[in-house]
Image (cartoon, rainbow, N blue to C red; front, side):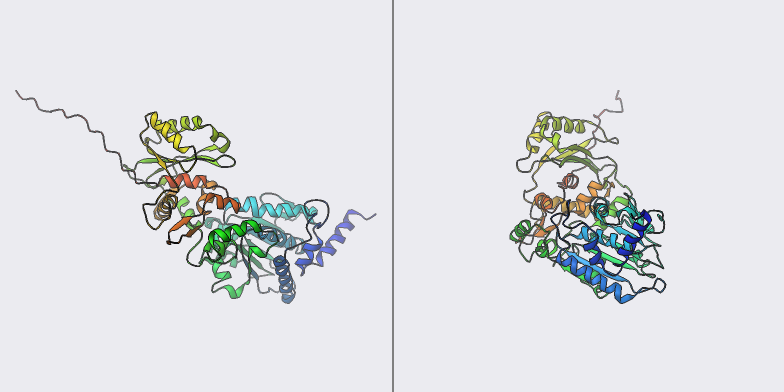
Length: 494
């Protein structure tokens, strides 16, 4: 019987044979076809096989000797939805970590939510399946070789610009320094600049993955612009992937059209033809989170109430006073509680009667779209004497002819405010909601915001927080007139 040390040595020798063969590693080091989650799977998709084959060839050509630095291996993958990008990223992490002692890596994504729940979650999931799983500790903060936490690791890092110092200074002169960016179209350019500093020695690697939601920025330049000569560029059409939902994709093509920006980005892996598909960009949201609060003394306090349709959606009340959408915390009600309309009426009435930082809500805008309960709730509030409650129909006509409906109009006004001075809180739900919706143009070239239904089809939750804040821009609310004291003469005539 072999000892534990001998088993470890045999495994290390076996895995080392895949130093320049990432495809071989993926095929040999995961339990394909065996009982468990991979029982019905035989291995990577076609585009993944081609990518891993290319990567192995690049490693072989460089012949890194552990001393002399080699030219960085760079790749950029622009794809449609549902092709297995997160899985590929996990394989890359596990292949590099298993075959390169002393390697150091960073993996990031466009938002903390994406990083935690999808990108790093995939590393944790596949890390349990890989043949070398016993070598590593993988927690929410780091993956590292046991006994070498500070010298052989990969960490998930937020891509916020103020976090760039945590990404800087990563070097592995005798091994591999690597970076993996998920949803890279929304990763700040400054993060890419910092990563360049870690590609100067050893056997460096950088892998960019994303949907090309923007027609500018580092990801666009790497895939389709002036930097594409530095990268191995892969464009993956969702219709060619065995993992993508073909029925859903066919609906998108039928609804939006083959040449629409929505299909170009979400299906074909191409950038939008005319404009960014992301309606509100991540950089603007980050700036709004950082800026100081500035309001005028006569700015009215307004509130938006977005109503859930049940399930995972939430009812959200958001407050804004001029450019201050931060100081008063949002109120959230789980979707399952939304079925009791009287509870919502009681909550909304309480909000209207309270004082917040010395101010009462001057106008409350209530989501009364379609068959929602918003209309009856607003009616009940008015019956209770709250005349400052206004119904909002998301599908109604826009006062501005460049928007196709009232929801797009509100979001347009909110986007302008975010760029022009609005201060918002750093709640992850709000950040995700503001940056997630895409948009398209109708036949009259008017802007139409991506619907909640379409967002859910591509795995994005309903933007309840975003809609609640957008409703505070439904119409201009004038400053309240001061209450004048009755006239009293100050002189007595006698």
